[in-house]
Image 1 (cartoon, rainbow, N blue to C red):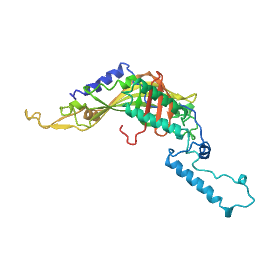
Image 2 (image 1 turned 30 degrees about the horizontal axis):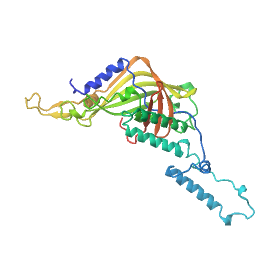
Image 3 (image 1 turned 90 degrees about the horizontal axis):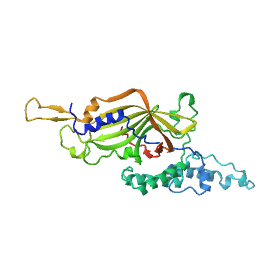
Image 4 (image 1 turned 120 degrees about the horizontal axis):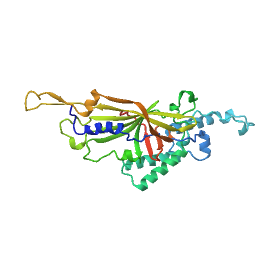
Length: 335
């Protein structure tokens, strides 16, 4: 069945996957965990207006409680300040290393750089150096000591009651310098337009997700489908980690998935009744009705990555080749 010129990109992906071309793992952070109280940050001058409103509100409530409990009418004139027992602040754990002004600024600067360089695709050498520097800065403020614990094997399971953030979930790429990723955008005349890039982490699997859209030049061509038609290519890997190296994930390639989204179009042909009312499917429509899930008998080594930074909405990883990838959690899921 014909599915349009841009579907060739999808079928070529199948060939690439089966011939061993590797897609770098995108997304994940280091150790160096610590917990500091609100009062500790206040005493060291770390507190500023940049800290989130929830924390500010918590501190205000905590301070007002202290003030109310220390009204002159309630205090014995012979009681000294040293005899007061500090009220436990329920927001003591709210400010962690990634909430310091230095970390917040580095994170903001990195996101701005990612946006201005189109996910790193158009980054200059100097901009890549700056991105690397910002990632190394955030590594020092990483709040998660065991970011990859969901991928520990059964015998290595540990108590995770004190683990704040998890690698599991869906992430969207905002910056990378990995050439296999930056080389995916083939320009305006490509047979498929590169969309978003993400990663789905659902133990024991990690799937690298690439969105392909209809190219702009194929706007009114038959077989191209609607403007929102798209195909998701998922390179499926099996991930493993260990408490001995709580920031390292090893990957094995296990297969490839192709999923489609988007409507079909109806074309009334003037050449005869044989073509009248026929349904012409776009690649998105075809793979929506005929999803592909390829799994082989063997699992091929697919590399490894180190988690440099992981908080509630950002993660940074470095591949074993030394390339960086920055991912964020989207408020609205797209895959």
